[in-house]
Length: 142
Length: 150
Figure 1: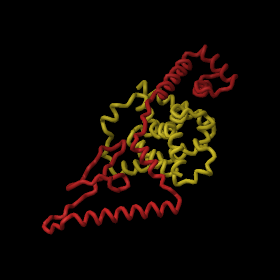
Figure 2 (figure 1 turned 90 degrees about the horizontal axis):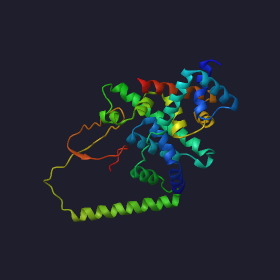
Figure 3 (figure 1 turned 90 degrees about the vertical axis):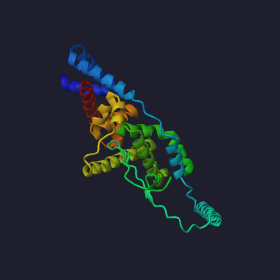
Figure 4 (figure 1 turned 45 degrees about the horizontal axis):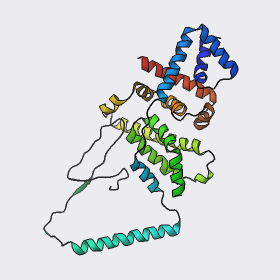
């Protein structure tokens, strides 16, 4: 059997995807052919190196975010959830307005949304002036 | 639903994240894409899924390809942008080699070595013949060998 046909079998050979007959064919050829033997060794080394790549764990923040997305689907629970949220926000608004004196002289602050472009190809770019509001990727404030 | 997503997360997060990280090789981007993948999962009718493992990888794969398409558009618009030096320096030779592979070769090597799927499973996910998986793996390994030597 010629080298090009054996080369095609080298990946399946190291991955344990060959039949018994094919394994015997590869091993016989390897005994006689230095080039294919070298290629096989290189493939095995590459396999080990790729398997050795350290995959980091996703952060706890992402886990919380993902689990947090799964809101209750039940319509009744949604109403309760929305009602409680609106009531809470309303109460907070009343309390805030009730305790803060109105300052007529104060110049209103201007806020700019700061967008962060984070890709493997880019520097992190910030182009803004004034006070910052940190945003998530959907544009909501954090 | 929340319980189902939590269970899917606990059971498959390493598997999905391993694939995404292997494909993009950047922790921040991989986390964003993991999040996007799970948003898609939540919007789907998961009760009808027969092979959850294969389906999740397909969703993650589509998410990665969508990301690359967006990046390509950005690169076309802003050709001056470049990768952070620190990211390049911290990578192992083999990671740099994988990064240079075409998406088709990259995904077979990741599915085989990181996700440890067999040829039949890879063929099913990529919707190709087993022979195609064999030849792509051979080409991927040859290109990795060349990049390590060079």
